[in-house]
Length: 505
Image (tube, rainbow, N blue to C red; front, side):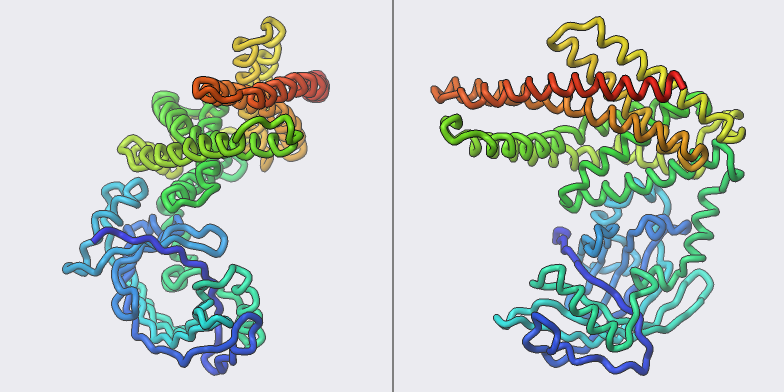
């Protein structure tokens, strides 16, 4: 049987054993509450010896009892929602299904997935129904008995859990208020497993895997930054696979920030190790680009079209733009997912995790960050200055568009570098990050107009070849050209301020 996906939107609460479960029929939006259904649930949680899954917000369990018994892989949260991938129980209770193992292979590689904890739950589940008799949400009253297998440490607790069915997310708030009023408190842990293992135990494993460099060194700042971006990479990889709309964009940003770090910190990194990973991050960005670019362009062009006078819109332009760019976005998402399922991405993710635990640093990385970082920022600022200087030798057309795009990439790299340096350099780096972000934004407007004009021409050719009227596409193209011209004027002013402030004191 193929794996199934379920979206869980839930909220947990801690509650003392003596507190009486409240009458939730009085909650706004709830008309009746079913008599409770009782379950005995038994779960075995699996992880690597270093708790790699737990450290990345992923849980893997085999649970018996209840209506959803089987293997469950819970991916990292997006706000209050988690994606759960389910597989049937199967025969061997310690044989993790191949499909679930494949979904975490870039994290665990060849490390074994073994039992790390058991959790037994006596559950009383209450179904909350709305005015149509539909189950809006379910509230569970759980008595939990858990044991950490490494050292036999056991603990018991009680918790209440609200999980949405047909209700909107606002139901979490109104039901949650009733539970808090009854004496509960917001959960101290977001999952039964993390509470069983304990934050300190997970942190100890994290420190074993990621030894800390001395405070104040470039090595410490860079390793902390890499750890943060690696976590983002894994979180948004899971989001793309789960179909979260913003995850492609977020994953692309994480990849860009990592790539930018390898460029900025090149003088203190072993390039023989980092350059191949830099190339793979560039490949990943290219694989993610079509989905995000089509999504952004669709929203922009439809918004631009809606501002046009009705008599200037000739033909089904909105429908054509919507259909073409929706299809392009769907194809782009499939391309992104295929990239994430590839061996190349698996190797890349493993390499990034390896850099977190042991960055390929040169001796200079042991120096104080306040001594090293100003030099690195100065290098990136000079690169931006050269890229902007190259604009003066170009004329309107593809050559000038490419030159503006290069300047945008240098501005983005400088911004990321300054943001990374802010914990060490404070106001100086924060000011540079703000200025370079402003420059990047204006240059981004220019590049977006280049992409929009390219796509509008393609759409106009399609309409023309089908004997349709392409007038409106030409008008939109002209508006985008005006947008680019304005961006060039705006950038001249932004760059003048940035250069005066950061290049000439």
